[in-house]
Length: 463
Image (cartoon, rainbow, N blue to C red; front, top):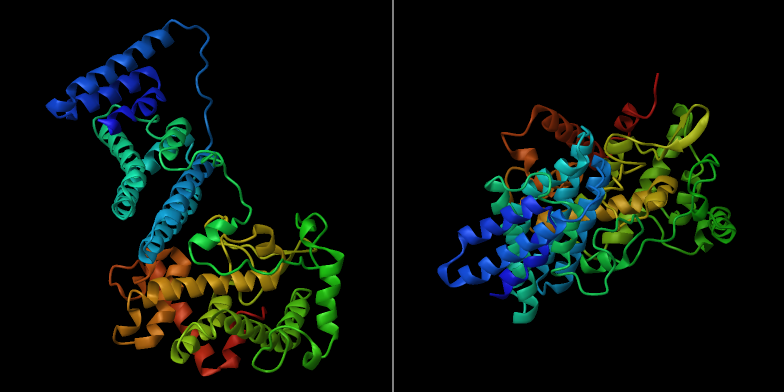
């Protein structure tokens, strides 16, 4: 049986006792017609164990910290999901793959808030929790593929199911999802010659964006001139780009190139002004907030003007503005210890509080921190994706009461907590904390929708 033969390298990637246990699980679960093949595998693993036992000075694998384990896991899952997304012919499957990746990343970020002492154990525990969610989606991908491509996925799934069965029988503990095992698993479906599937990189991955339906890359970010020299954003700042954006600021809107907002402001002009401004006091806020709303309005029009029906676009536009209010009170920067720094909250960074770990590979982490326009557009693009692929696809606008406005509530819930939170705003079992978050957002959305500008200052002016 080819699938069983392909498990040889996987089993041999474990330390000897676990490898023998893994082979025993195979043998115990085998049909009579497979027993001889499995016996050969058990014998081969036992011989490898005996050979290892005869060697001296074999060093144990070094311990890993939880953060490193989390990066290893995310690199593994991203590699798998990216490959499956490229292979999947059906858009709904790609959407489900991407939702799987985002939901897992949200879970990992939440787990890192309460660090575990043993990263290896965390890695195995997380594999155990994640596998039941990974298996069915990849099984659906395999069912749509030609036989040869499907075979690779079947081997991958057989290996994962074997690991899960071994864990249930107590054969594997911290070795369940060691880096070596995850690499061996990933190589079942990642094409030969690809980068190491466990390599973690925070650079934007254009291929990942393309596979999962994101538009062309966002404009190159330009770091705020207010940021302290120690802020690691220097590579974002180029003399020509600064002059270009500064020129937009100085050129009258009627003659400036680029998209216009509803009031006639040039979007780049607004971004340049806002990127160099930490408003202080009520007087400044009265000038700052209308400009911020216009910048966000222009961002919404750029991304979605022709991609949503009018009534849904109106919901989306107000959603973008209300989300910036909810997440940061429309601020990208704050003053700390006499220096201007990116605004950092428990969930993310800057104007839209984008979590760079959740959105790794899709957005420039330094741009998220250093450029209000880049941050705003990234957040608005995420909202649009959640609204179209989850809220609209899930028919939240057909739920009563609420209708079309439910799209805003559902989309924000997913933005705040991941795809699995889409319907939490109307579920009776939602925690009191999350209900309060959703209610606070809903009040802000209604204020934006009604144009109640007096409410905008509730969090903007201290004292």
